[in-house]
Length: 563
Image (cartoon, rainbow, N blue to C red):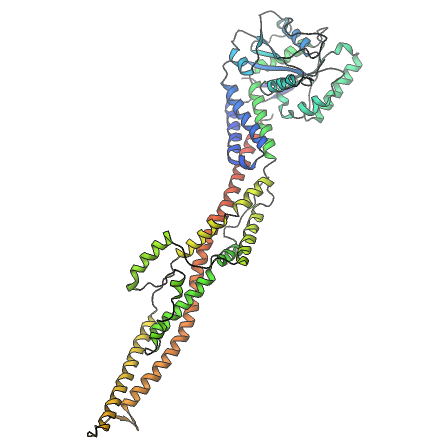
């Protein structure tokens, strides 16, 4: 495989491996970012990938060259001059060519290739039919030359047929004439659009016999300038005349060069990949925004309020105080607290982790899977805070992205309301709120029982003494501490110390409740942060990752080997 040389410009040969790799990169980009890319560009890219697979599967080493031009440019006459026979119909009536005509050089069968091109009019050029071998030692064997309908034909079917075949050929030979060489149709719709295909582009100024020498040079220079404006720099225009034969041999030599390189198809297909990738690249940003590793604190705070965490924390603190006072309070009034509703049961939550409540743990686990809490729904203010926070995350992640990608990020940052609410509720229900009774509860409880027992014994002792006095029984020597008898000291001391210990327990219970509330808040907040990472930040990161993969795939596909 030799380098492709079009005029004085030599281009590095394209290997099949490189073409396959770039095509695979384009296909990967379309698969990864197809939903956020322009549908028309995606369809065109898929067509390019399919075309590559079809073209490289065709047997043989043929090079397909198309003569394309406007009405009256004389491309059919030039086609016949290159073939050396009157194959294409030439006449005064326009348009003359309605269907593509093919001329095939060499003995290798081109039937499969021409069937793929849907070209039914075929002519096999017999060896020696042209005098090209006397001009150059190169051969045209392997050349498939097509004469196309006019690309500016007033007949829509002719224009469509020309454009269809131009999508499939390997080398473009744009035939123009002194009257239409600056035509906008040629430059705007073809040369400029196919500027990346300069390695397989030839421009022919036909009908040069109608010009003087000075005029020919001026038009060639102007045509070269126009092509440079179109993006094709260093273009060498071939001047021909199908009538006099001037320049026909030069064009044959140029085509023979493309045939000898056996690389024009790869160049054309690789240029298609590059052009398609460049078009798709317009829908991808140069880079992606970087999200912080941690979940946004404002988002977590908004979700925490929407999940009812303040309500849960308040219930946990209230439950802690109730349990503390119930276990350490004055024994004679503890029963009153049993009449109060359990704040955790009202929310279908559970904080207890005592040995006697192991069965409740199992019930709580089942509720985590099958049930829901009874937390009140979020307030409108809480819902608005969540919307603002998620929108802020979406805006931060979408900064600098094209509209389609920015919308995808915004959609990812705004999950469906019921789904997010269910996830938050399950996070709350699935978070362990249980606790073990602090040691001071047991100590205070035991002390209260002892003090209560002392008070009861003192009261009983005094009652016995009163009854004995009422029955006028002999006095019993009662131990005293100074003027106060022991029974009175036991009764009053047990009551007063019990009440004092209960007051201290209430103060310690409030303090412990606040500390327990902070612990539960942190635990629940961590769970909410996990939900935010899974349901909001995670999908946003996934969109940005798809953008990165798409961008890198397009960069690989768009890269062109240059000398």
